[in-house]
Image 1 (cartoon, one colour):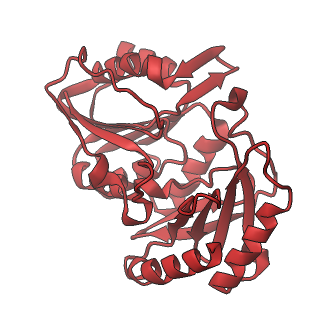
Image 2 (cartoon, one colour):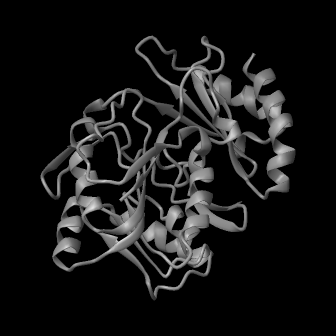
Length: 306
């Protein structure tokens, strides 16, 4: 069942994405209730993640991997197997679980990104936001751009390619900031006027406010939960997003735009008290074809005008 679904989906998507020079996309996400898995394609490398539960059998994931490899006619050497866990998991959900340090370079339109398919649950590229990245590119011309929780800097690459006059990319992880630097180099983005900042988001926002930094366009795509040992802080999106947005708004020039997104499946927005001139939910515009699902929305997204 999984092999048939993946084979049909690949046949449906691969041609059009090849023409767009898009090499990372989703082929399957729990489409069949009995098969709790996700299958992504990364330039000839299928990545299969099993949504584990207590009763999950130890041999189920390799069987799914073999089925996908046969369906897509790829070697098992190019198949990557992972176990995904739902919920908060006491902060352990996204811990590193391997140290192979093997990366491949793939294309998304006219940009290139480095992905690691082995060492983390997430690969370095959230392909569900490729449409959102293109929106940012189209809005970025001449703008001062701020990228919070920047991960591997892909939004900043798009903003720079779209003609942003400056970009600032912030993440607390030294590993991710280095990774973002790799992506900048892959896309010939100069260090001048494109800063990478390793910092806790709220510490950065406090410092930027004191320094009177101002931005015209910002992206904030925070985690649902985080526990920062270095800064002894916990972040819960449901409770803390109004504070986060107020702090970002305080750095925006009049008429500035904030793209705010979350993949929290039970998120309840609290936007009423924000000092803004308008807000529009743009979720449907930002979800690519390969992520459209009747069961759930992979993320939600808003365009906030200050």
